[in-house]
Image 1 (cartoon, rainbow, N blue to C red):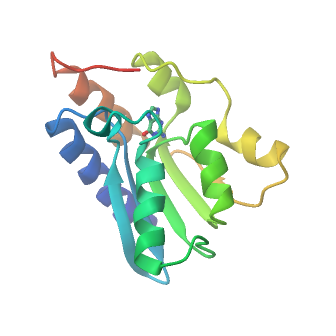
Image 2 (tube, rainbow, N blue to C red; image 1 turned 30 degrees about the vertical axis):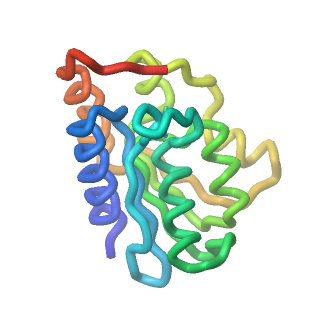
Length: 156
Ligand SMILES: Nc1nc2[nH]cnc2c(=O)[nH]1
């Protein structure tokens, strides 16, 4: 699967989440050429502030593989991982993370993001997960505008 196709899956999941009244974040994970997880954010659905798209996808992937480590896994996420998710991706030993929109985009959409780039979190901690920005950036950024059409939207 190409990184673009993996990101398209993350985008589809994000749109599913928006339709269900969730916030506009989606994530997909591939291991050994197979998609093993694709999730959207469920913070409001589960009343769990940690239920970011990436955390949900990591949990699903680890359930699938029955192992907490995902060495060699490739992740595509519609938005740059926050510090919590960057740390979790490191803990899972994910190899590479593609992202589209940025933490600044999420902040501009109203989320109270910590202004700490994922790259810095990984580098400052001595991690080896590779971060690749700008994959389908315009499409990922547009998800925030789609979500803003929902009058009942809530951020956190
Ligand atoms: N990357 C990402 N950033 C967020 N900011 C708030 N929620 C999320 C999420 O689920 N994923």
